[in-house]
Structures are given as structure tokens and as C-alpha cells.
Amino acid sequence: ETGVTQTPRHLVMGMTNKKSLKCEQHLGHNAMYWYKQSAKKPLELMFVYSLEERVENNSVPSRFSPECPNSSHLFLHLHTLQPEDSALYLCASSKTGGPSYGYTFGSGTRLTVV
Amino acid sequence: QKEVEQDPGPLSVPEGAIVSLNCTYSNSAFQYFMWYRQYSRKGPELLMYTYSSGNKEDGRFTAQVDKSSKYISLFIRDSQPSDSATYLCAMSRKAAGNKLTFGGGTRVLVKP
Image 1 (cartoon, rainbow over the protein chains, first blue to last red):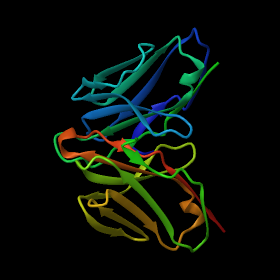
Image 2 (cartoon, chains in turn blue, yellow; image 1 turned 90 degrees about the vertical axis):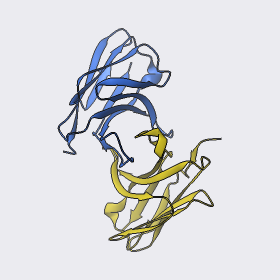
Image 3 (spheres, rainbow over the protein chains, first blue to last red; image 1 turned 45 degrees about the vertical axis):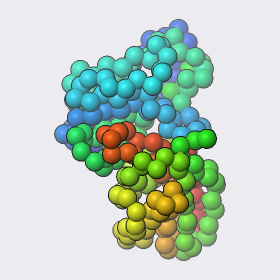
Image 4 (spheres, chains in turn brown, cyan; image 1 turned 90 degrees about the horizontal axis):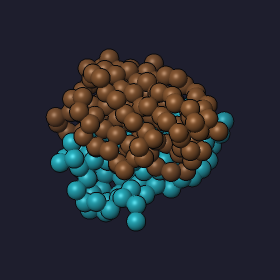
């Protein structure tokens, strides 16, 4: 375990389904992130939550909806996805308020949209 | 032009060889530089972290930053099959807080 736990590890969903990805950290970090990792592409930052407030939303389609109820938990709600949304979705956490020390990543959720 | 460029590889080397990885970047405001290692079906894990220019060594790993050339490197000495993974560079600006910009990753294969 890396300290950041993501569930489920694998998810197959139809385009009309609604599902949620969950991320949990108990590292005392106060910033959490969702990244999308597609084959042969750099990690794409989707959302940033700092102190439980969303501080960045990188033009992500509305079919992705994040939720951060507290500093330890982060969700990504999925609705009417497209096949091109199939990817590895990574959650990460970090400390805020100072120089960047890097992120701690979870193992990701491998999402397949059929 | 991408902010961070990284050769995707794959880079195949025999066991015991030196692995040399690098990234170039365009934003001169980057001050914090990191290397992550990602094994198959896992999330990236932080390997090395450096601030500004210079070298940093940690065991078999050496990270170098040349800000004048906007070029960073990672060297792995005495490579092992367990070093086979994808290596991603990442960097950030001080003013950007914790926002990281990643390279696309280089896949490395160390053959026994």
C-alpha cells in the first residue's frame, strides 16, 4: 500500500451507467488530485482539491464530477461516459502551502467503457 | 510544443548497464524537478526530488538538473531487472504551489 488507496482497481461500465471511483489517504495531506493516464500520453490533470475546495478544473467534461467531502476522501462520479474515456484514473495527495515535494499516488482504477 | 518532452522509448539495456534518461522543458520558471517510477498496473512513486540546478545522488540513482539548457537527467547505475518500469519526469513552478507538469514517460527494460 502506498498510503493512498483507490477502489475499485478495475471497472467496466456501459455508456449509460453511473459509477463512482473512490480515493482515500491518511497521510495528513491536505490536497488531493485526479489524473487521467491514457496510453502514450502524459498524465492529464483533471481536478485539484486544496483544503477541501476545488481549485482547478482543467476543462473536464461534465460527465466527470468530483467530490471531496473531507481532506482524506475524494470521489470521481462518472455518468454517460464515452469509450475514449477508458483509461487509468489516478488519485494523488500532497501537502500544500510550501515548495512542491511531489505527490503520493494510488495504484489507480483501470476503467473500461463499453 | 509540449511543456515537457520525454522520449517514450522503450529503452532496452542489459543487466548491469547504466540507464540514462532525460527530459527537456520549455518553461524557465520550473524550479522543482522530480523523477517518478511506475511499474505496470501501479501508480507512480517518487524516486528523486531536486531543487534548481545541480546533482543529487541516492544509491544507484543520480539526478541532474541543468536549468541553463532546460534539461534534466536520471542515471541508474548497475541496472537490475527490477528497474524495468516507466520513468516519468515532473516539474513545478514555485508560484504554482503543488501543481506538477509531467513528461510522457520513458519505458525501460533491463534484460537479465
